[in-house]
Length: 86
Image 1 (cartoon, rainbow, N blue to C red):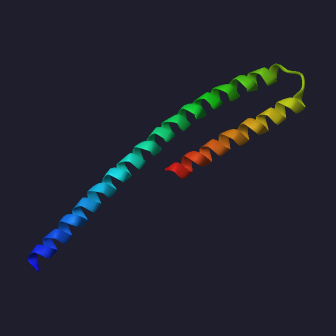
Image 2 (cartoon, rainbow, N blue to C red; image 1 turned 180 degrees about the horizontal axis):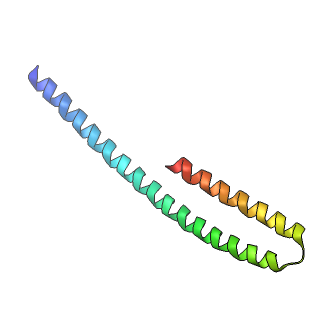
């Protein structure tokens, strides 16, 4: 009886160790993805800034407004993705 309980506890311990390894690997993948998303967000923000300057110099306000809406939507989508990952 005691031997069976010990064996059961050992099996549970092994299962928990395996689960821990799996969760640590999943956590690392999500962390890596988060770093990539942050880098992409920084890049998009820089491009947005460049586009804003370029369009500010442009005489076509319609194109400028459309570009701003597009970039704002892209940044919003990235922000939503980052929130879902956390």
